[in-house]
Length: 160
Image (cartoon, rainbow, N blue to C red; front, side, top):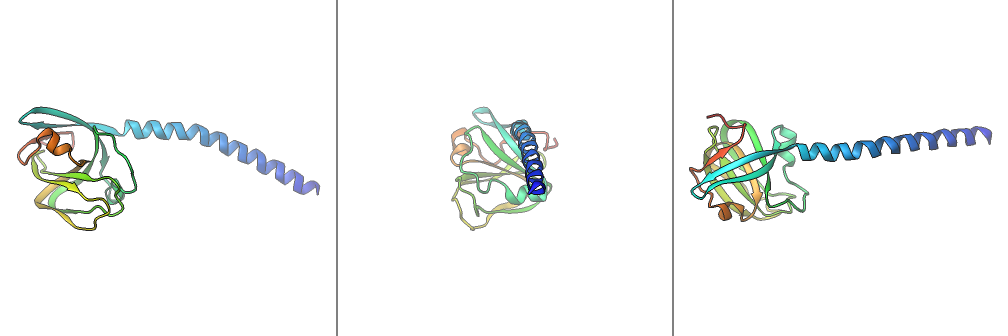
């Protein structure tokens, strides 16, 4: 019985230590997520429009995208950087938020805007030509700022 009590006490001490470490890690993870947002600007006929975007530039990040998220602030979005121009295909599988998808060239020029993509749809949304990146915003954001093909996108991902 003494061994069990000793093992239980060690287990509880370990659990308490892990809980304390977890409590320290959680706020840092939240701070990192907030720091991961980057400034992105659209230049339309109405002038500049600033958003804060999360960068998805690895295959795993691009595959997950905004799946499973149920809310995104109006001034935020996600930038999918493919690192090369080519045809791009997107879908809304497992995505709760209706989105506008903005396809962008390597030089930061909007090439195509797909508006109001339906949540959970497996319909393929294509770039309609070569694209270097896709920016996802809440549905209606592109219309609200008057975004159209030919408009400029400013972000370090795009070379001029």
